[in-house]
Image (cartoon, one colour):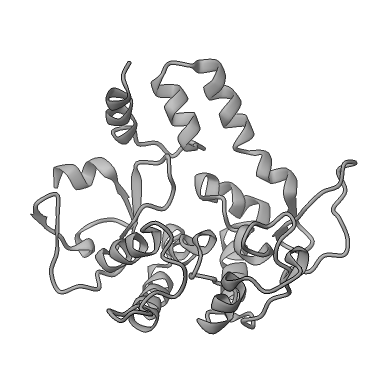
Length: 250
């Protein structure tokens, strides 16, 4: 099977099963053993969740959470982020993350706390301030460091669990206040097109929440008019979770 065939089958496969890109590619290639292995590995995040603090945490060789713990500290087990941003990075099993928190309401409460938290940081294992830390403080979104990839999906978690008004509020605030046509019109490192792509998806109200799942999260459309697949686009005509095939066929 060639790469193009894999791509076509992958894009066309919609499912709510716990998944990653690697799992879906293995499935398309008919590698059932590797698919099973990847599905199991995709759930290993559960072993890092600390129910007492509500964060993903580092463990030592004996399986104990390392101390001391500071959710504002960057580096170490957290790449270009701290515990606040990385603890929500379970796009492939966001329902499972809610279960670990004790239910959807508690997960969303933790998400509200992320946005309400003071915009601050500790240099942590980095030992010095990297530009992502400074940018995260400058944008003043609590601990939602939308200036860097680990936070890209965070505002859309609300809509994924039936609170689109909060997603709409934060996404519009970010787009209106942190992006512009000027030379400094990005809230952080543009990074090979990722920041611009985030902005385009956000303005359309169509966000690819999880790589490996052929669906999008709907938000408020922020442009006057747009076309998707050569058809007039209005995100209000779609459910909160939009299957990829629905976009192709509407």
